[in-house]
Length: 224
Image 1: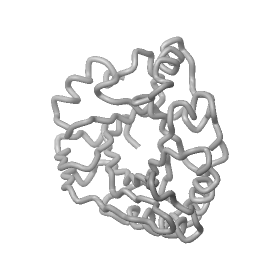
Image 2: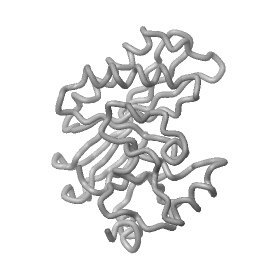
Image 3: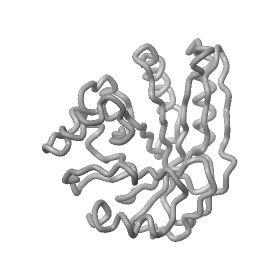
């Protein structure tokens, strides 16, 4: 997997400028919304143009309906597994990633989902998740997940923002080992810290990626 991975969300994206030796892309393949006892899929509709040699990660975003809370049933779990397995078969996809900001009450369901998904993926397909920075720093409830890594999202951190920024700026490291393989940052919320050179960096952009975005980052994060 390359050193730098660009998160690529639901919008038209042209990444043909990427140097595959240095950059990969984690693209939003689908959003699954859990409501009552059903799973509502919203598959990617926007075009993604990228070189055939670029390392691709298919991301599944999972959300729960806030008004019609899901039952978190076995049937929903099996449907989610089926949908995620399908993303692993997309053209040139090398790995899959789950983006699910679970509540405490949803953790048992998520854990069961991840364990069963891992059993159902091809053996050579890496499984990763995104993780709230607060989980990685203070609450490693997912330590036994059968995944390759948990990418700590050190941006949009809400009430924990300043606490975690100080923690990282002062040399702190993630409590959970699964989080110690990468950083997740955003172009508009760059961290003031020393990044460990042996870790990958996932980068979120609130707009479509342009080649000049990488040039602007090259003075700091991308100089590693």
